[in-house]
Image (cartoon, rainbow, N blue to C red; front, side, top):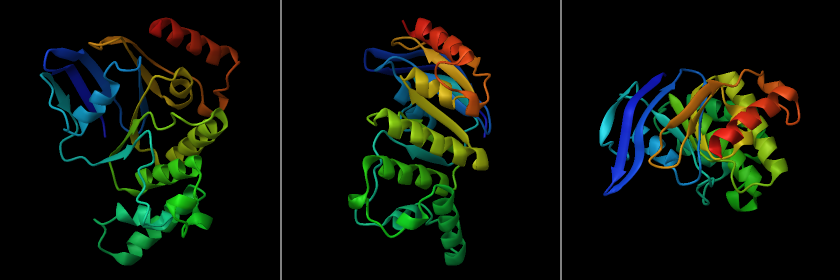
Length: 235
């Protein structure tokens, strides 16, 4: 699923949030939109899901497409088990055996098989977000939208979840768009990163992170070069 956005302009009353953005989200890649807090990054996701209508601009590639969403908080249903939360997004699959097989596969892929019967109330914050990642991949979507899903976690949990996500993504290779203000998250996850200005957000720069994901370690020369480049763009 490839999405092309041209001259995207969004206003809320007199407040202009997006000031004419051109973005290209390729199929089977992770595109990261990086920008300051409050610059309108989430608005881009809301436009993609048709929750917000643009004032001007065109969007190609979303007609009839299905989206999974990863939020800042897990948003699990507390009365359902881990397996139940995954099954909840599989209602479109009428064949019970097919649905159960898909659920088991995703649980195994995300390392959650031993927690299938657990309820969210027994899980840590990091584990809950892990279930949310599993749910996003379980849902038969064309694109995963990610609204700063690793915020509010300590560094160890954040890195663990990022690694978990990329491990599963390498197996599935689904189109994904993540918005964040965190430079480290952008470098670790992005195939291509789009850097926005303060609002009304415009595109400051866009480039590919040309480091294999397993080699994206802080302190290495190439990582530090991207880190400085992104820091300078946001400063």
